[in-house]
Length: 85
Image (cartoon, rainbow, N blue to C red; front, side, top):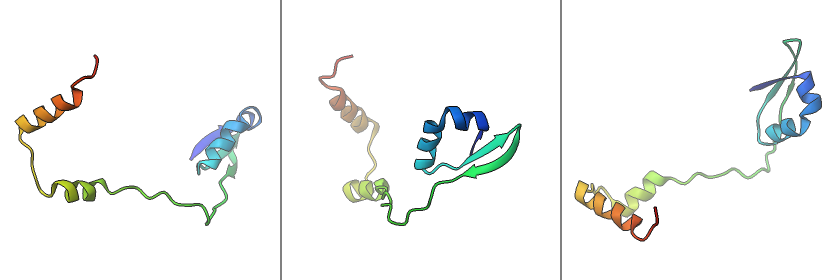
């Protein structure tokens, strides 16, 4: 939870609005004492992001294979082949 003072609410409301729209909760203080919370409205129709399961994908592609140091070096050189710098 982020904490801001009343002056920030007045002068930087667009930043606070962006924080709240991203799901951040904000505590508003006056003279160092909390007086209010600014919280986002829960939306049930908001689509939830599904994070890819990289471990399952890696396992499906490579099974349980472990690469040797020579193979890793060769793959890295192939990735960098043709790049400048």
